[in-house]
Image (cartoon, rainbow, N blue to C red):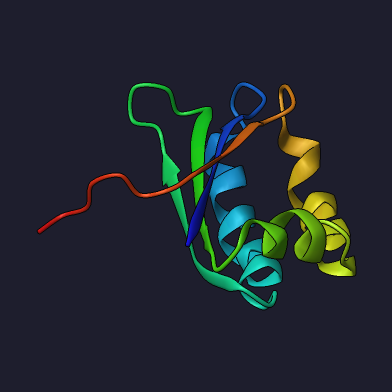
Length: 99
């Protein structure tokens, strides 16, 4: 399993609206082959900051499958207009998990 983490900064004041939009738009990601789950975290101290956590079966499910799909274009069309800057996206593997 690969975990995609995206640090997203939205325009000032757009946090509440973005939260609703990303909640609805997550279906574009969840329906993609290899997607094992989507979680969106909203900042308390920084209401314009969101962290997107997506679990993928393989790295290629994200980088080749989803990114090359029409679902990715729909996802970016839904949420991209809220970005204050390009999200920082990185991939991780689990090193230690809850017992």
